[in-house]
Length: 301
Length: 290
Image 1 (cartoon, rainbow over the protein chains, first blue to last red):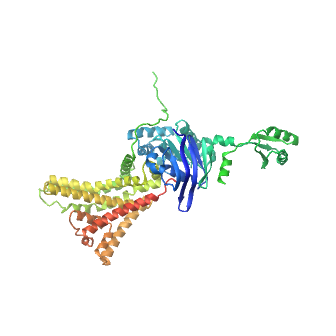
Image 2: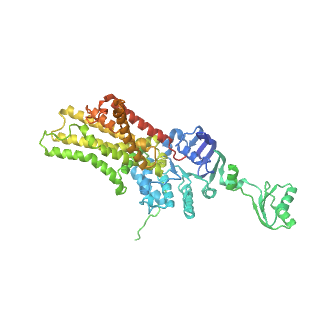
Image 3: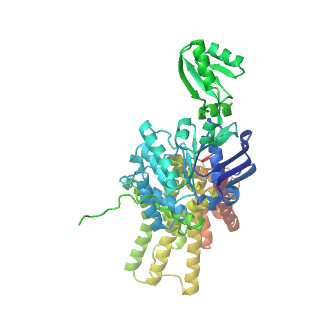
């Protein structure tokens, strides 16, 4: 079975004169993938195309081996979707709603009833499953959304801003649940978010959208290993050290109170010696890491 | 001996059979019927649908009661089955304007539409399932009482003469009841597709029907522009169509009573098609996820 869950080649989508996706290329593999981007970058539009809710205007899109435009209903039996801003009907019991959605995804009634109950237990709402959704907290409603997306055992789960409106504790719980679904349950996840920290905490890979195109995509592990060089923090002005490094042919740039030494992985001894020779106080010397924030800012620009 | 309990069975994959979109439509229709009837909801939500159903069935029960007590062959109060629909106009109006919008407006307001369209349902199959649910309840109101009366009258020896007469009467009842149910369903869906707020849809249907009645009759009768303008009267048109199905003309209804039967049927079919097409057009454009 292919390790590629979603494959997009030159995908285009416009609303009138607004070109939301302009030739988007990306591959989403197994595991948990974060779909990052500033507001208006096209994250929700891309999710809509993956679900087959909208036809694209150009390019190729393959989700779980099929084209959503051609086989939308069949594909959606294998997808779970938790939307962002939806309130859900307040007078319906959580168990009824989850069972109903599971039945719509093709499960026989008895199986749907069992699995709805099980899904609500899995998301931590076992005791609350017969409560009307309108009486639940925001965090509980987000869990109901998660349960309805899980109950029919999808191959791919699409989560649109799943921590929206949650307090820090609820957010931590939800992120832990997402991590559990992606690892223990073995369901691939595409998580749309604009919060970098969330994506860093739970995702294996990331696709960053900017201006309707992919600004960056790859695993977070590769991202961390991508950078080379060192970050140096001194207790005084780093300019003299920068000048000394440049004089020895090592690229160095001052970044506030820090010094970024790039390109040379063996420069740590040289930095140490120069700091000692110049009589500077060294606070920190660490290998330079590219953060998701660095990539995000670069991609957004 | 200690009692053993399984506290967490963990997540279980499902490899069993899955039904297709057809079953999803049936499931959505069933769920919608429950919802519009107020089942599994508060008592307050049951009031209007219960009143609508009662208004549609009570006259039939009364007529059947009269038939049971009157000597055989006596006049039973209704000259034609078409007359019965005059008794339930209010019920159909009440249901189409104040109950049926619940079937679709709430889905948009609560975001359920997004979840439905993320299932094997498409926009078209969603709309068909919703229409089937509304039509099923309206059909119960338009078909149930006349069929009940036909059976009761037949048992009271006051039904149509002969097998052919009985089957003709049944056919006319089926045609009339279906036409009314489909018309009111299409009208309700078309107006409800304009808004996510149930109350606005109700007001829209209510005002639209009254306005159409005033405009249609005003143009035909007041402005003397011609009888065919009475076809704009959305209250009068479907009931006139019912009379025509029974081979009669509604005596109380000039100027529409003077319009040709083919024009009545064409207008009814055209309006149903127009309302349906409008609702479909609206739902193709409603934004959900993405």
